[in-house]
Image (cartoon, rainbow, N blue to C red; front, side):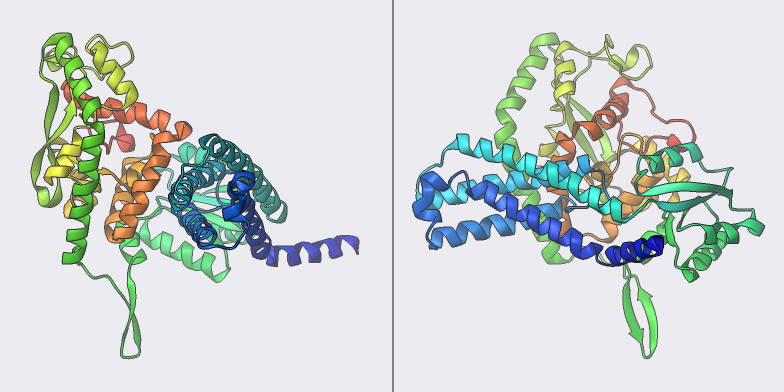
Length: 479
């Protein structure tokens, strides 16, 4: 009887979990609000205690900015992400919100507020987010035990260990109970019934459709790798043909207004970036020239929208004629890397000249990374969908760079590029620009990515092809 009562209680709590998590989010935001205005209260009580225009505008600025940036950085994704990732994302949103509100508040009261207090606020906000992220996940996983999962896969084409390792990183969300060869048709129905969720990896279309249909009828959660058809359908619109429902995928380019806005944003932001970075770039150029008197810039032909080619720019980090020496990839303590080049690589500032590419219109700030000519045909043979990347202008950053990691498969990165193209909007561009900050400063996700991608980017300067074995072949830019 007691066990039955506990089961009924747990079911009631699960039904109310959205409200519980929502209340936790509200409470966290209230704490962030108090954490910003509280420390300034003693010195600015005349503005904060009375309900004045300053109070209203400043509070509204914090609320709107805070909610917008939390949404941009993925929200308070309790139950979906690890506590560490939630903490990092929400704190970055709070940090930007704090600086915006600080500047707005200072302008309205016509004096710069104590910067020391602002630093204290950042500490308070970090601790607040840290506590609530862990508390939110604690509550969520107390209510929701891990999903009992079955994995269906093709043993001939699936790197199963790699996928199981990724699932294993989310032990509180998923518990793999069974692993099944999709060809075992006599067993898969019983396996589906015994589990809450299924993962489908590299299963042929006909069998995949049957499995999805069987799972859907029994209200099972489904996780499957996307194909190009899935990406297209995912962004279709529902239309009615008389009384018949259709999914419409219309092939449209950016509207005239979108093209104008995107180009203006590229010019303005790259122009500002060039002005701000010009002292740094000047010092880089002088240092490179003084070290070996060789050319400052490294140039290479790349492909952008509609197959058009252009010369991508970066600062030279290797000795002149490095490609005529040993044919291997750049590595730590490589004697072909100059002393200045080693510093530029470590600081990731050898890519700054690409702001010029953006200003001149060769690239955009957001878009698929430009690929080398010699790789385009090879990748197109491996993945016929690769040519669709050239429907938009190449970019400095993109969804594949933000959502992907150093070990993300080429096909997964291609799917991310195609997802960006299919759901393009000005808002998405701005969202990805801000999310790039998250990638640049998140060391635990970028360290390996930066190392491997940098090796591939520098391969061209070495004069070496960078094509990895089988499906781990680099769908990355090589410089």
